[in-house]
Figure 1 (tube, rainbow, N blue to C red):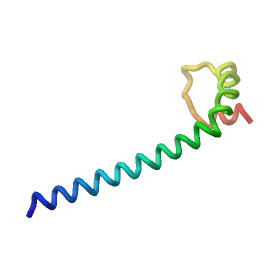
Figure 2 (cartoon, rainbow, N blue to C red):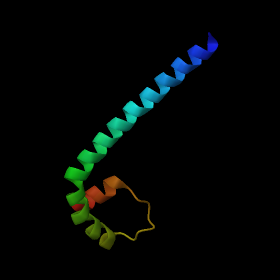
Figure 3 (cartoon, helix red, strand yellow):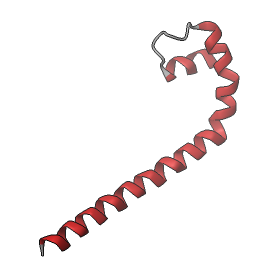
Length: 66
């Protein structure tokens, strides 16, 4: 009985992980499609404005882009 329960438990966890993974991939594809060009335009400006070792903050980069 316990073994079957464990299998079900693992199956649920794995399916949850796969679902999250799929969501992440979807977000990444959207990110690549829309934000990649923006990033490519903004990143050089950002690197010119800020020395790289300083704390890297996405909001900071956006602040420089806009």
